Amino acid sequence: MKEELEKRVVKGPDGVEFEVDPLRDYYCQSAPTVMPPAYIKIVEELFNWARAESIWILGFGTGCGAIEMRPLMTPRFDAYRYGIQWRPTPRQANLFVISGYLSVKTLKRAIRSYEQMQNPKYVVGLGSCTINGGMYWDSYNTIKRLDDYLPVDLYITGCMPRPEALLAGFQELKRLIRAGQAEGANRYAEQFEWYKANQKRVIHDWDMPDYNW
Amino acid sequence: MDFDWIRIPYALLTLFIVFNYGLLLNALIAKIAARVGRRHGIPIWQNYIDLIKNYGLRSSITHGAMYYLGPVFRLSGGVGLLLFVPTIHGSLMFANLSFAGDLILALYFVFFGTLGMALGAGESGHPHAAIGISRGLSQVTAAELPFALAVFSVALQYQTLSVSEIVAAQQGGMLNWTLFTNPFAVAAAMLSFLGSMMRPPFDVVIAPQEIPIGPPTEYHSSYLALMQTNRAIFPIAKVVVYMNLFFGGATSWPLFCVKVFLIYMVSVLVGVVFPRFRVEQSVRWFLVWALPLGVVAILLV
Image 1: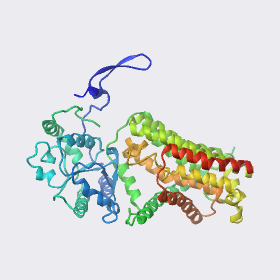
Image 2: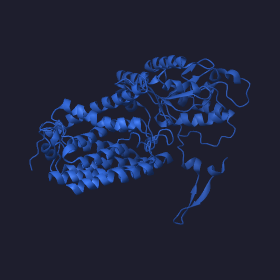
Image 3: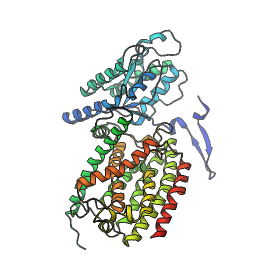
Image 4: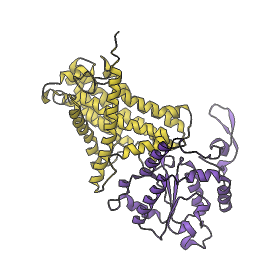
């Protein structure tokens, strides 16, 4: 465990000594819970429509596929006209695009970012690497099946998929959201133990709390 | 003291109109900026959808009481500014809750939201929020100085602290506007206006690339939605103050829309042309260029 995460006694500016346990004090200890949809069907449908038409992507590129997301902001592809925007902070983002191979080191950051996002949230796996490891199938430090670690709503295949493929994929994601089938956040909460066990199996230097928002 | 209770629903109607106008105007300006970059841009109703979505998110996390109150303060700053300033001159219906000393109150409300946001974002505990807040407060304070001088100059010129009377004094032709009767005050105020609209060159506060959007880094779900609501109301309310003080006010809603759009576009046009200032550069810029104009305006009156 890193030195700054260990329990220690700190002396404050006024001379009072107090104990700091970063993992307990700085993070929430409670696991995610299943959040049911709104009770009235028509309200939930309205929300689902709004969620589909306003997708905010977390600006976090994990692999080489991140390069294929940038053209979407440019005049040639212009994803903004479909209500797709990029947000710099996980708190405000709804969609996490895992863009290509995911090394174990990055997986840790990806998990932390994903858990900080608010329910409902969606994960799109981009490229073959997220499905079966792709060209990194025998690598010692990348994960092979993204679905074992985070609840994936949609895969976009290819190596690399073109920006057009991404746009088509986002349209498909919209259809799923409108149909109320994109409940990845609740799936993650239901199967929390299973996901955590999988994550801990590959991340050997696990120096964070089990659930960190 | 007798109070005309019908003024409250009328003021709420103003709020409703301005809220919708603000949402559409923000989208329109995003669209114009997109067209400058030869993009198609967001749909004009995108802001409504974003709002519904953010209010409709299922989970939200709090960091404490001030964290709750930050967006509330921000929104009340915008709404308060709008409610206490007459929107349409000569219309009893849209005079809102204006009274004799409303100019001072307006000055206060302009600053109110920033302070509330500082407290709320401070409690979120995110280092980027703290950086954004310190940048924002120093920049807004520097930008507020020339504006305050300009407002005092205008108040001296018309010998009143009532926005309604200032508007009334400017009626009867364009040459009666403060723009022509007191050009130095208007120049100082317009330079300060650039600083408070969160557009380049003065948008280092929210700097999306380096300190992920600064103060609202930790805000999400309904908190963020409240701030988006304010984002629609506050700039319009501020432009209304400027329109009333310097550009002769508006006598009807169409005129209101045109004038607000044109004044708003000043900051947008400057924004698309000039790159971003660092904080100390912008503070120096306000003190060197805008403040002397404000002092001259006071001296000339």
